[in-house]
Image (tube, rainbow, N blue to C red; front, top):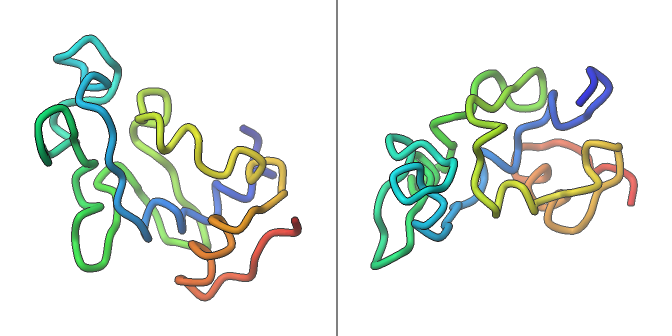
Length: 111
């Protein structure tokens, strides 16, 4: 994405919710998500490290929310991350994106 991508300044979704995904997405199971960034939840369910804390923040997220952020595993992120806010990189929000941004005091993107 380009520098105009509001997600590159935001990061609220990565620091506001739990991210559970199928363990089949782990590298050890033939997927792309690095095993070291996941914690087992139950049989065949994993969670991104850091998103299960009282104040969730994915361990792969770098930077300051609302200013400048990056994902250390963007190319290898699990399906919930790939599916979240599909229009946000183009400056178009949705309800889930607006809720994540509100948790960090950020205004919603236009819908």
